[in-house]
Length: 292
Ligand code: GUN
Image (cartoon, rainbow, N blue to C red; front, side, top):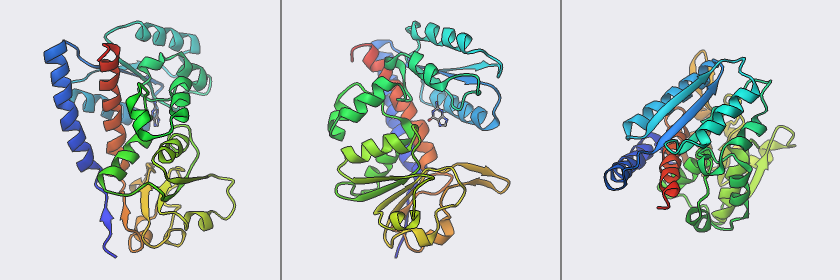
């Protein structure tokens, strides 16, 4: 079977070119420069790379971007106060608090403190709830809801690759608030039949083998192997495991490649899409804040 490698970099490039034009227009016609603040607490090396990459991507398409770097010992109250100030700053359209946070800070409390209108991650309960009650993707896109970036990027990749979601059996491995759960809502809105598996799932391989679309988002290097995948399936690998050999996904690429119809590589698959959808959400935030 000829396998299609889904090129996330290429799709991301096209979307970013389109966004660059939109940002230019917003500036030229409305005098608005979209602005994103990323807050990083502590010095986790992976988080530092992600935050820097986000800033670079913003600058490349004309979005104003600022990193608010705070010491690992920052107390919750200080972080809440910073968020309050960014909430009240009209030049800041999007606020992102990089996760994970140090253990002494409640991520739930912090996420709830971000204005839902600036929650470009789509993690605030207001946006999560809104997403959940919408029935179709058209309804979601019509309303002023922020869609979490990684799941949104996956839906865009599937669309660009011409992969039918309607009626497909989709299996997601991983139930995180960042990927697994919101992706389930989006795939449901696209009329897929959705199953979420997790660490306590019995007979995982039996379930993953049913999938027309299999999404690996559990954060364990190369755990999904050829034996767990149906012939002709589409495999989306969300894994970003930094090992001594380099960046490795949750899927054992070489063992599934002969069986699948299409697959996202790591790196160069889902990763570039996540940042792209953050840029898109920031542009949306700027437009919505101006009533556009
Ligand atoms: N950490 C890993 N992924 C993400 C993400 O999408 N948003 C935030 N805020 N933190 C993350």
